[in-house]
Amino acid sequence: MLVPEAVMADSGVRDVCCSLTMAGDFLSEYSAWLLGCGATCERLERNVRRMAGALGCAAVMTILPRHIHLTVSAHGCADSYTRIVGTREMPISFNINTRLSELSWALADGRIDFAQARDRFARITETRPESPWAVLLLASLANGAFCRLFGGDWVAAGVVVSATLAGLYLKQLLSARKTDTRVVFVICAFASSVIGAGASLFGLGATPETAVGTSVLYLVPGIPFLNAFSDLLAGHYICAFCRMTHAVILTCCLSIGLCGGLLLMGIGMF
Image (cartoon, rainbow, N blue to C red; front, side):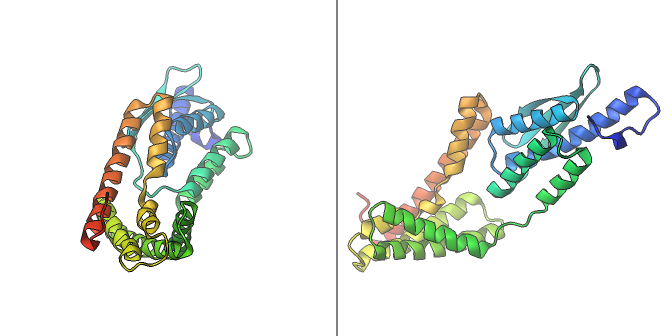
């Protein structure tokens, strides 16, 4: 049911409208954050409908790449409330994604009420991002592991770790300066490929070609590709097309930077 503090008027209709306003504002902000942190459209719809049902209302959504159109209505009442909200521009975060999904289940299962849900949502949105140094270290080691997985030796893996450290650190610096993401991908792929090509240029290890090929894997937009296919299967064709286009553009930028680095180092691409 909707929260008692929403009932602040002297008529039943006014009470419903006020409650719908609070529920609609909360659900729309929730939707903007969940979509912004990397959730699929299907997960967004399920979470919002689950929470709306727990609040005693129904929710209808139109999900666009940069905006969400949300309408909530009370059961057995003609009143409704509509709000259009822009999605949050933020890095993909599995931590926030998971905690927001857990919030929807906690509210649906009756473990928390509306006021507690809003408080928890406020705490989730204030979550500080992961330590950039931890991300830098772990991503570099993971990319080095990819090199080993694809048949690279330990020397090649060390080169890939170094290339990833340099490229990802550069990516963090450029992103902090609000540099266009496409430009960031070109520059970082170029820097990492130059370092990775050093293994081939100086004859380091027995598998220098593997070091070159895996030095830019940390830039591959895997999540946008996966979300695009998920939205396509769920029938959200507009979001699927936009996400796929964005992922393809980033992949092209990655390829431009990689080719530029190989050309600079005089490494044959074919």
